[in-house]
Length: 97
Image (cartoon, rainbow, N blue to C red; front, side):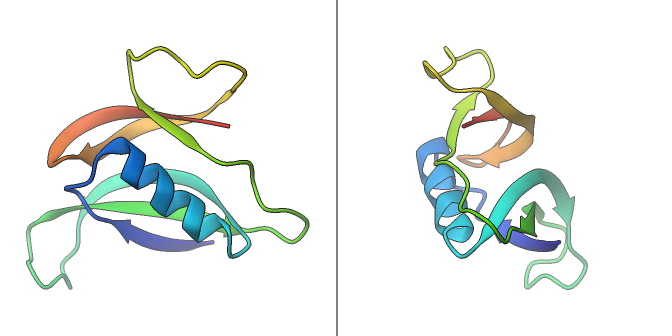
């Protein structure tokens, strides 16, 4: 398991793209938490902290990220939902595959 920060000013499509890029290296997104890092270059600033696990046998299907309440993508299954900073705003998002 390892962690990556995701910029807080991005739209959902850009966040999904960053997750897919990370997963292309042989890992899978598990969750995101909004946290404040003491060792940040801007202490006290909330960050998106995504958790990934390494996978050996496959690259996960392309993630589709939506804001909660948006129509779910056809043919996809909900894999995760939780809080994330999207476009600088605290939002509940859903990740489908």
